[in-house]
Picture 1 (tube, rainbow, N blue to C red):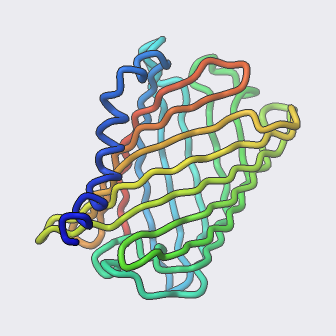
Picture 2 (cartoon, rainbow, N blue to C red):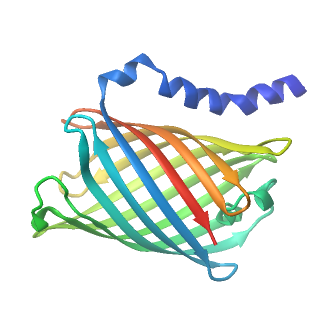
Length: 234
């Protein structure tokens, strides 16, 4: 029984490693996306989130876009989750969370401000604990997008499965998720993302995350993204 549990524990991490070293990944255009996120907890239900990120594109060998975002998170209906006391992201112990935010994404290629994007966004996330260490998350996100004089909306649905692993003092949360995008301009589901990754909690306030994403977009070339995110929780 213990051997079986150990195999299931390492399975998501195996997906992450296999995704990174898969030969097929070389067929997609490569992007690297570093990100920094600061979380400030106001009380047991409210917190603020500040994010800054960028995207480096292999084809042109430079950063082609950046992003700055502020969100207000509202967590509801707490539940007990094993290891959550060791995880800096305490929001994972909320069955439902709501996020309201604003994002600004300047275009770094042309320098034309009319190509910069502004987003007003809202999210509702549902979490379903499975057993003592597994967690299934369903995130529903709506975006109101402004690019120059063009206004559009987009709906995104993401399913994520993760598992907390604790081996002595070492902790890791491998995960896999899939996300689908519905675009109002084309009136169709025009993009699907698949991601494998892992979070490494550190000293109760910091999380270092590595992930690999494949983007499959209708009528466009597929993309490959390697991301690294540094989260700081205060």
